[in-house]
Amino acid sequence: MVNEVQGARQIPGEGYRRWFTDQFFDLIVWYEGGEPDGAIAGFQLCYDKFNKERALTWRRGKGFTHEKVDDGEGPFALQAKMTPILLPDGEFDAEGVTRRLREQSGAMDQEVARFVLDALVGYGRKK
Image (cartoon, rainbow, N blue to C red):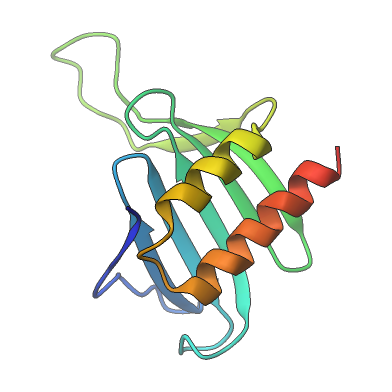
């Protein structure tokens, strides 16, 4: 089940941030202003964290981006790990990811879950 991490790190100038996680997902939600009672300004849903991690990001006024996560691991065991970065990725499995998030979101703040799930359904319809 996707649960909220209490005490998520706040970054000045980025708006209030909430973080939800489980073994498959990381969901970061940004709010306008400095408190979680404002409108949702964006979210980043990272999925398939331990296999082929990808990130779907939505920002109000900008729409969606879909990227793969290059975790910075080098091909050699003794090579220093680099900083993870996001790189363009192909097709987003909106139906599969939406289904899995719906199944795992029972413990989440339901207002956040509905917002993200509605956005994912909208993404799937735009195809």
